Length: 297
Image (cartoon, rainbow, N blue to C red; front, side, top):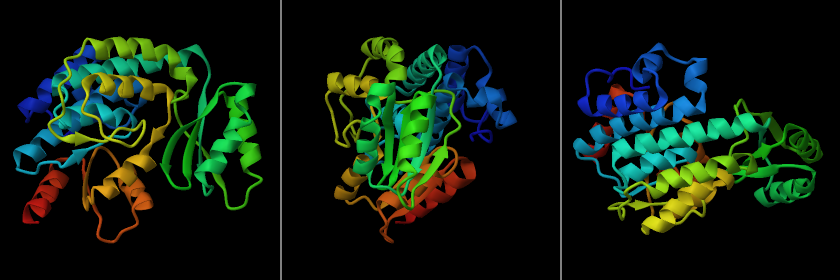
């Protein structure tokens, strides 16, 4: 993603340089080479993805397409903060670097894993997880849609949860390829460092509405936003609530900026409305196509 813009877009190049300084590696070169073990490391991936996403976002806005509301899934909240006007894009890249490195270091302290559970009621999954909390660290890490929950924690405890859930009909359990147990108590050591970076950050009242993962509601108070973003490391991503809020806003055109089309699928799972359109932007070609489509509307 973004390889067709490296060296050709001054704004993106500035953001990528900021990311490169933060991680001590050439982000543009690594991204241009394609998928690699280095790119998969969250300490590298988070600032790199934030930089490229914001480079694409700036082009969209400069072309005249303005957002009504912003939101981001997990680390996606960092570029979303810049997109809503709460933080400078360059600072957002630095913040993503701190977040990624802090999570990397926390993941090294104890072995963790994650599984995806599909086909069960969210509350049923929560109740099952709750019965295992005394056995070790385990938590619902994300509710991506009705019937789709990610669970995070100690590998042995996760196996127990998986065995209990397999007794239900029509359930599918998939191990996730991750380097840490995200959004559970394994990330507690990362919170203090990330909160410190947020406290040092100049945060403005958003000029565009933003819906937050923690509760699926908007916030415009800088202090509350800091708490929401920091606490998110150890609480579930409630993407289902974010989508429900956006449905109330009667949003019909979603612009997904990022690699792949994961969020596109999640929008459709949460909002199965044929009038809703999800536009994916991951390079200049898709960007031009989306701008032309939205400008025509």
